[in-house]
Length: 397
Image 1 (cartoon, rainbow, N blue to C red):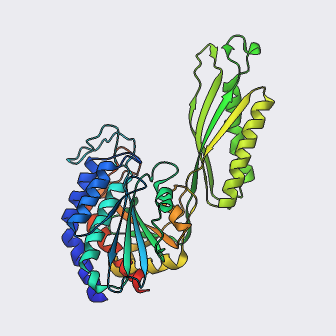
Image 2: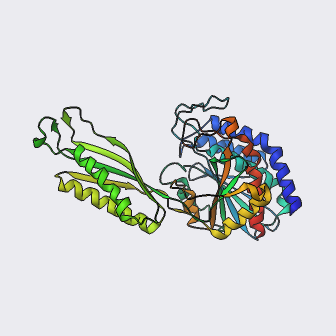
Image 3: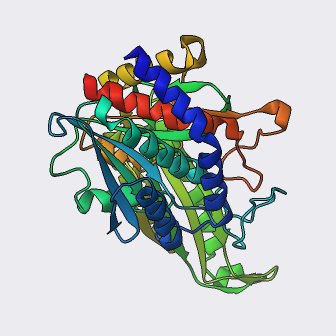
């Protein structure tokens, strides 16, 4: 096995320039969620160039390819990457900056996809040196409800046969390049979108007695709903309720007919998630009614909580320690961010880990979902081989 580890490391470093080029191509040509047609075609072309035969157009733009080792039916595990970009105008002055105005790979999905392509090439080359099958999943729409993972699962990517485990990798700009992060159990939050339409009766700002002011009602609702977090959630239960958008088409002397509010609710427990959403709906509706108005509540249910299976996480962490050294493997804290990889974790034992991409000496420090997000591409010499080694180790378990 140690000889195979050395071989995988060598291949990962050897293929790194090619992986960097793939990442730059994908970065330069970003596509929004569920619109990844060109990206999917590019991924398919790369896989075919390696000698693989992907199944295309799963959940419209998703792909799956299986790499079979010796005795392929002995065991199957899955690896996953996402392909979509974000509606952000890139501010980086780099040769591979986005060519598509207002669209940018600001969350590292270009890294995830190119890295998994590198993993595919490595696994294909060493297929006679491991037993079992590795299923590689390239999915659309991670950034937009209800999440591309949910569609991929509906289309059967975890069936015929069901993998014994699934592994996901994500960039982490808070972690220096060369470091890998893990966490067992509760790791990422559920994510639901909340839309409130507060309806009143508009009129002249100097005659409020003739109106039902939705601006005032909306203000009370926003403040009151924070009690859902401070007085209903357990202090031991991480919860976030944030309203990031308010729109009321009035003026300095015009009270509008309605105000619209948009926000997000994050939780780390599925029972509390359901209870919290019910409380938000009831409080908003009854408070608006008590003030003479009306509140229509729409909840767009997003991703569930992400729980990393303890046994899988322990195994791939051990694999990472062998690959990058124990001193380069770190513990992660929980995050109220969310990930549709959580859907996979509800079906099969799963683990989602972090690949360090930060390099302060190069000025690469921006967080994800910002116009200046970038990575130290040295991470692309590590990521593909690391995941290949994890896959081999999972198959041998």
